[in-house]
Length: 111
Image 1: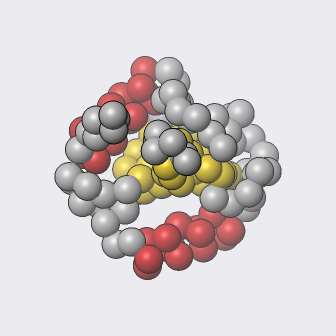
Image 2: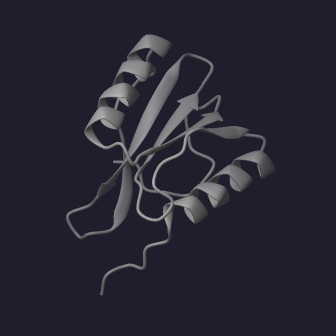
C-alpha cells in the first residue's frame, strides 16, 4: 500500500516547528506549490552546508539524499545546487536550518 502524502505546505510548517522546538532554527527561503511542491533542505553546519533533496526509495518510501555530496560544501556550491533544482522544478520549497552536525530536525532516512 502506498504511503499517505501530506500537502507540502503542511509538511513545511511541521518541519519548521520541529526545528524551532529543537534549537535548529529554520526558515522558508522559497515557497513552492502549497499542495504538491517538493522540498529542498539546506543545513547550515559548523564546517559548511549540505543540501538534502527528497527522493523515493526502490520500495516507494520517502527518503532524503545529500544532493551536494557526503561532506559539507561552501555557500556558492549550495546556492548553485539549489538554483539548478529550482530551474528544473519551479514548484520547490527551499528550507534552511541551523544544524551544527548537518542533520535535519525531522526524522527521515538519508541515503
